[in-house]
Structure formats: C-alpha cells, structure tokens
Image (cartoon, rainbow, N blue to C red; front, side, top):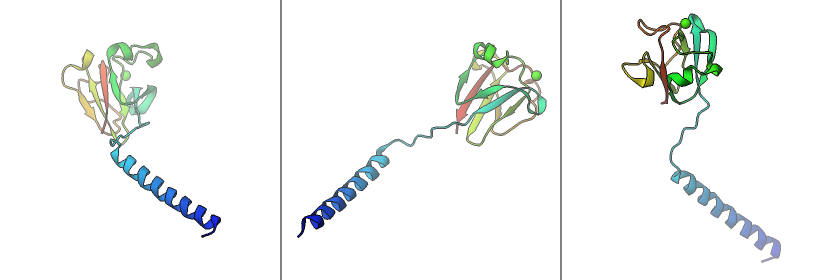
Length: 125
Ligand SMILES: [Ca+2]
C-alpha cells in the first residue's frame, strides 16, 4: 500500500470515528429550546405605544415600574405573543391571583385586566 493510500484510509477512519462521536454526543445533550422569542406589551389597545419586549421570565411590578418600560405597571392594554410563548398577566403584584393567559396576540385586555396589570410571567412552551 502506498503512503497516499494509507493516508486516505486513515482520514476516512478518523472521519467516521468523529462522525459517530459527534452523533452520540448530540443525542446525550438535553433537549433545550433556546429562544429569542419575546412578547410585546403596549400602553394602548390595538398594539399602539409599545412599552417593550419581554423574553421568558418573571417580571414583577418593580420591573414594570422601571423607567426603561415607561411605567408599564397599571397601563398595559394590548399584547403580542408569538407562537412558542405563553404570557400570564396578573392584575396583582408578585404573581398573585388569577392571571389572564395569552398564547396569541390580543388587541385588548379582558374585563378587569385593562390598565391594571402589575406582574407578568412569560413562559416558553
Ligand atoms: Ca393603557
């Protein structure tokens, strides 16, 4: 066997070993669903005057009072929710009481929730 043939054989073997190593390695990784998805919250109905976007996480009234969100606390009137996220909007601080639940866009809040949202959970589905 010539040196070039031997080198080619070694490269093929190394390639197969690497392929099978990577395929088993990826199977062992937990199924994670990293996301750039975010909900959008608005001061007015029909998606007017956006406060900002929120990725998965819990946002209490202190967060919503933050200047970066223009005092969204007690002002939210519509919401956009992309596929893959669920938003729980509470009309009480610290996620207490029954939330209004959204899995899609809503141009208005249900009765009892307009201009009264004080905490938000964004959940990845
Ligand atoms: Ca409002």
